[in-house]
Image 1 (cartoon, each protein chain N blue to C red):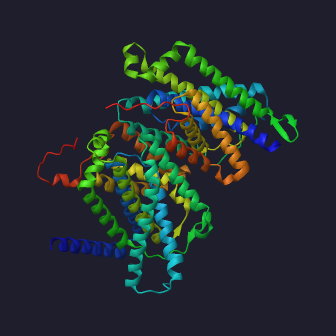
Image 2: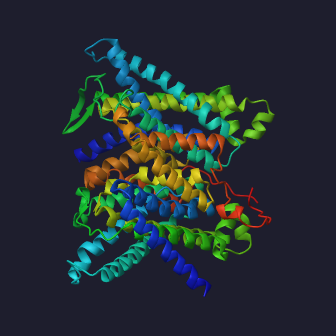
Image 3: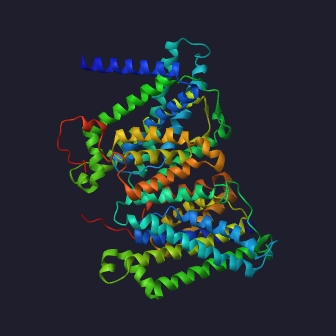
Amino acid sequence: MKQLIQWGSFILVVAIFGWLLTEFVPDYYQTIIAICGINVILAVSLNLVNGFTGQFSMGHAGFMAVGAYMSATLSTLLLPALGFSGEMNVFTQNLLFFGVLIVSGLSAGLIGFLVGVPSLRLKGDYLAIVTLGFGEIIRTSILNIEAIGGARGFIGIPQWSNLYWVLGLSILSTVIIARVVTSIPGKQFMAVRDDETATTSIGLSTTRIKVRAFVLASFFAGVAGALFAHYYSYLNPSTFNFNYSFQIIAMVVLGGMGSLSGSVTAAILLTVLLEALRPLQDYTGVDLRMVIYSLVLIVLMLTRPQGIFGRSEVTDFFKKRRSRPHNA
Amino acid sequence: MAEFFQHLINGISLGSIYALIAIGYSMVYGILQLINFAHGEVVMLGAVTGFFVAPLFGRPVHPSLGLFLSVLLISMVVCSIVGLLIERIAYRPLRKSPRINCLITAIGVSLFIQYFTQLDFIFGAIPQSYPELIERQIVFSIGGLEISNLQILVLGLSFSLMGILEFIVFRTKMGKAMRAVSESPEIASLLGIPVNRVIAFTFVLGSCLAAAAGTLVATMYPKVDALMGALLGLKAFVAAVLGGIGSISGAVLGGLLMGLAEEYTVGYLSSSFRDAIAFTILILILLVRPSGLLGTSRIEKV
């Protein structure tokens, strides 16, 4: 019964806010809100690896690319071949999109597994470089596959994604990851972060735990990619370059590594702030966003390395005072 | 057969440039256990400095060895200052922080320099052609095999710089201090070694080599671009890991192997794999022998 109420209120909130946003908000702002939502999914899922498990992945955009291209291939090439094309009723279309989202998430998760197993044996800085390398390899591979557009980009993806989907999935992913983090496997992630040697000594395989976190994060990155693909109906490999991965890292670090509320806040904050700064670009002639992102990171590390939220969550303020050993 | 040797020579001259950059990564890693992501950007700044400085010696630029050496020297000075600033502003305050914070700062510094250089009033986002400091001539040619004076210059300069570095690190007091700090900063400081000064000196040395590498790259492939440091730096880093990070001779070996691998890949496979080969090597070496060819692995004690 409690679950039914939770699901009901979730759907109600998404429906009401989705409707309000699509009806009364200008298109330009709708796009920004959609980017915010997609970035929230990316930041929250990357936090699982970089914040909660204490690893440092720099290839998140690569997994997003896998999801995006997988979904585009499914909906643009495979489904029409199976006879699903042209006008569809709303129900079939959304059901198909749901399936596409799951499959693209799973395929990104699979790639995450293949990348994670060899590279998560490594520590710290090496992992960062290897994930960076894999991200680039994924992007270069896509660039060289002609069937999915290659360097020209993938065009003609049906516009199935909308604010309802983005809003719903960004809330859902945050809730799922929040649940994961408080579960036993989630505690294992934090155990690896806090002391790897101690975790091994109680008989847990740290590599397996890290791979688990990595695969889960890749899954959500893939879902975000699929949402992205079906929102813009156009994909280009250059979107998913290192800069995108870096932007997601900046969000996670700014919000606080190990705080989901922080990631959500920072993702929205940075997306909106940098969109607002766009007019400035006319004067400087270059993507000013990267200058700002990098400055934010440097200043943050020098003055407040724990980010906005540290490891605390918004919900902590509403809870009764309980001792939280890790809330340093 | 001539083709094979041609690739060999090209690979060695490219590899010696990688080696110069890789030494910088290796030295900093040996002392701070930090991947100095901004090192590739120092290489880029070396080339950019040359681009701005060379016309000051008179327009149009008259190619000569003297010009090359003066430009090189000025680039080295500028890059040393940049290296010092990076260390002082971004890395020194984080000496006691977790390593992941240092890593994030390093990435931040790297991207900041990259994009700051791209601003219109600094250098701009459009690649520029590097002034011709030395005229390219074929000095040696047998049966299709060609060696240019630039390749000889690259080899001669990089190996003499490595020789000087070898002398500094193993024959001078400062070098002894550097080795002591990389062994253990705490004990070194107990023995009265000014650790911060030694680290700053390491950055100066690394930046000088990076400036030389930047000037040489721009002389060989006459193009300057604000993003050129990123890929060069990454490949040189892979070279350092390949040779065993923290070891200077390892960095040289790794650099040469990297240059050869790249050259032969382009020559016999396809040029579209040029950049992929670096990551492939990295992943293989990390899986098979993470400590690198000449590196020693440290045993973790609990």
